[in-house]
Image (cartoon, rainbow, N blue to C red):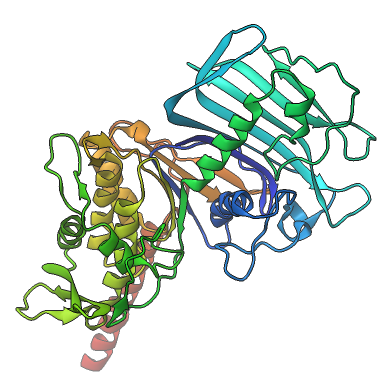
Length: 468
């Protein structure tokens, strides 16, 4: 689970400042305020980790990627190629992480990794990117137990120097050579292991980094429209897809799974959980996925809406149901330890359903499978006041601890733009509510009252003139 994030010189952000990442992390703001850029940055890193090109520092994306960010000049702050993109984040893990020095036999352990890096354009080849600096810190109880870093030598061509803190790297007795070419934005070159007697652990750091981004899943704001028939060949999809295209396949793949919605709550079949959440949101009465026939790999999604006895196909009900279904399925389908990044999960939903969606998200982070916490983290970009209000209420009711919710507001009224932390207290109050956060509601009420009074006065005057 991500614990902290900071991005500098990326798109609209000169500096996001330190972002506290909680099990439910929310980003609000006006259109083009930069809130989407934070998720785009994380997805670019995921794309890079999964790219087949180990030498590509960043992979900005292609035709079928979640994000397509273009060239470095198009993604860097103010489009100034002299600016360097720097970033840092921390994440924890469920299993213990230990490093043993083969020379001293000393063991270094931690429960959290911190990573930071600086990326810029190459000196001569202005189209290529280089990593100027990267550093890992192993932390235990908030204190550093070990750190290892790689820094580009000034004036040297493709040469790096490795160093460590609280750990002595011992060079092998052989002719020295330069360390070259990082592995993407995060990886130590293979020469580090060959160059030092006790640097094998850097490969484990690379692996931990890859596992972090393999656990990141993305669902965009525009989900596929509902279909009458869905094909499924028995293959288990990794996720519902960027647009929810694998939603029904995921439901069918998860039919043998059982999910509990929290402590001492009975585990139920996956499909029953999805149906329950749709019902609690007031969208349907019943939900099921049927096979057309044993000879065909085709399925239909049937729903029964409130007040009706008839079962109908998914395209025959409100558009909002087809848009929220991928959201619910992704939240419960993702494997334990997943980080789910979603844009506008509430889109096309009635305000009451938007509020209920917040309760679903609480169930997601509390959910268990096979008796163990699923440990899901939700990173949500949203415009929904109703979603936030319900979370505030649940914090006041002690349904969810305030530390499990982190909310930020992208403020573009300042230059450069700032990311303001919303300070939510234990009563659910936001102590630093931004002006016109969800529009000028009081201003609209006052102007309506003035207009109504003026209209009554005009009508009254017209009546008096007519009488005279």
